Length: 451
Image (tube, rainbow, N blue to C red):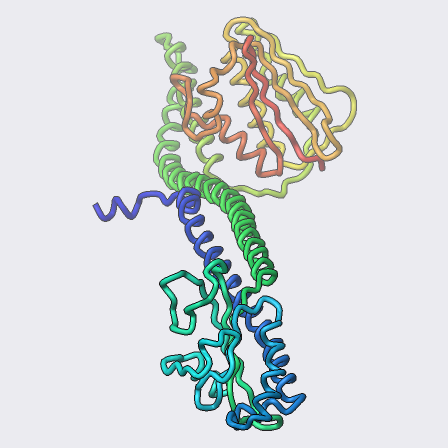
């Protein structure tokens, strides 16, 4: 069972189609969340920094800062009261509290908070340590996070709470802290728009990434499948090569002896066995031809070749096939035109391909019929040969398999004619295709690279 599972083919495209969206969406969500969080904290922190500079400047400008250290001084108290009125008039401020060094509220826009102390306040502790603290939250009536939130307008649900440390000029000594509650509507709206843009960008990027990767994986999957098919074909060829080497060695020698005996029988006087002898010779030649075909298909051969004159080769192949066509009352014609048509390849191999295809056409047509060998020039880099027969054609369910090795519809066929032709033509950068017409007849097209 384990071996069977290991041999199960891996479907790359299917795994990518369902696994990659999960990963890409997770990455997009994580990036969107991180960027949105950074955007929120950065903008709020920037806004709080501006408020800190403003508070520090107005308290230092008229000496009101000393009131935080000496809250019992009546002169400083009056001066401080006039100065901090600006805090309540700042834009979007819901409440402003000023803490002294002893954590007591010395001034507030809510008079009921003056004189109160709030011991459990981590943000105030950090501000007293010299750090600017920004905290965002929501106002829900009856569910306040801190005691000092009581009394804030519940109609403003979202607020930003800033704790601003107040220091002496040129020193790091903290003499107090200013707490500002703001409802920054414009800033909040800008942040909301920014978050929408971030999430739309993340979604669009995820879709674009998935589409691009899917296209690449699909191309890669197709390439892998083609290479897998070629690998299987190469493995099959290796098996065929080993098989044909042993078959050729063990069969050809006995066949030669059988053929020699049959030829002697034809020449010997006495009982007339000529028909039997000729039949023996024909069968021996057929077996020898099959072995030759196997050896040719299994071999790699050279892919350089020389120059071949297609017009001359087609005429030669047609002449060699005339006798066979005449016995079946068939006609064969060559339409080449005048001129020299040179292609790159090997004459012996191309002759084998064309003779094999002519033989297929003759067998397909049966008694009577016409076969035409037509040479044309489709473009400057190729020459085209069409072998057209008037036979019944190839069924649609069969035509897709004609180039598969050992596939044949003939009772005595080996199934290597068209695969061998394809292998030879492609060895010299050519191409072959088969077109069968519904009304009857088949056209085999060969494309040769010009020399």
